Amino acid sequence: MERIEITCAELVEVRTLTRTVAARYGTPDNHEFLNDASAIAHELPRRLRQTLCHFRLFEPASAMLVISGWKVDDDKIGPTPEHWQHAAGGDTREDEMFLLLLASLLGEAIGWSTQQDGRVVHDLLPIKGHEHEQVGTGSEELITPHVEDAFHPYRADYLGLLCLRNPDRVPTTVAPISNVRLSEEALAILSGPHFVIRPDNSHLPKNAGSDTARTPEEEALVRKAYRKIERMGNHPEPIPILFGDLQTPYVRMDAYFMDPPADPAARVAFADLQRKVDEALQDCVMAPGEICFVDNFQALHGRKPFKARYDGRDRWFKRINVVRDLRKSRDARQSAASRVMY
Ligand SMILES: [Fe+2]
Image (tube, rainbow, N blue to C red):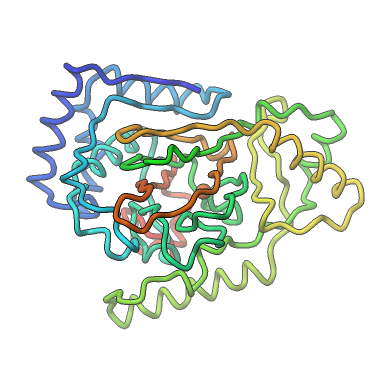
């Protein structure tokens, strides 16, 4: 994986910037902040900007960039909330704003109206009752390797994670597709439209917030978005798993939400690919303050199981989805600059 460590001098610059930005814009989900983020990011230290820009441009096969050196103030962020709906208790504004500023050098952060109530920054923390769910708020279930929102044509190009707390050193797992060796025959089959991916559980109505304030117009839009997810679940479009340049392919896969294909050769190739992805899976233990960006076209990611504590000290990550081209999803968003997908 690619790595960059923020130096002490750079950290002083970054802190000055995030403090000013937090005072000016208040919260990271402030539209004005999101609209200005890519301009403000020009004020980040040049070495950081260059690293992110090169990660975007050169698409390294390792498909993952880890940025360390950011300091999380454990007292300031407060206890790990019991639910993502109650994540506003502590103060994580500067942490989130730094994550979003870095992300704006890769593209635009987006949210899904059907996931964590359309928030652009998600909270990954264990929720009581979700222990055995295949979602980011689960704990005891292995999160199997997947491309984030693989079912959706407007899925992110990058997944951004910021570790606030990880007391049991629970590994995030990553499998770059470049580490999976495939025969010419397997490449040909896997790049054909033989596969279907259903929406993952994080987009189900049962995982929506329970106390979200919406206007009747917004409520109608969200209901429509859930119907769209339901349709995508009932009638998934056949797609290829591998695409782009097949010498260095892009990948679209979430085996947990895929059926074995009807075609026997495709079924064999798919089972073989799953085995090879499992073999290619690497552990990445993130410490508080570490940030990583995973290339969601070149790698699958997951998480090892863990035992939640529910004592305010649990594993707590912030997650964002970043697209390189906001324009391609214009038919799913309310305005050109809107970031929420319906
Ligand atoms: Fe994920």
